[in-house]
Amino acid sequence: PGGRTATTPTASPRRLGFRRTARTRTAFRRLGRRTAGRTTTARTTTARTTTATTTAATTTTAAAATATTAAAAGSHLR
Image 1 (tube, helix red, strand yellow):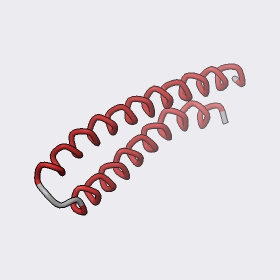
Image 2 (image 1 turned 90 degrees about the vertical axis):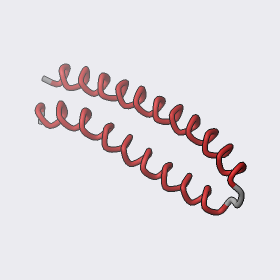
Image 3 (image 1 turned 135 degrees about the horizontal axis):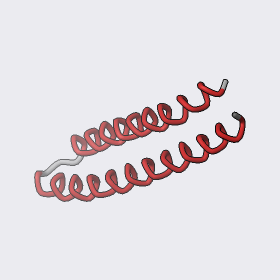
């Protein structure tokens, strides 16, 4: 069980981060297709990219925090 606790926290947050980014990208693409007009799409895409980057950063930081806490818990269990 000690090995599992150590390996899972590092792997799971990365997977979740990738899944979240993929979902947001697909959603942004769909929204971009729906909106008509090159100027509108360009403006929205720039705004969306900034929001996506911020969300990704928050997810990565949260994942790192969870990984550190999980590692600490694992060390205590060991």
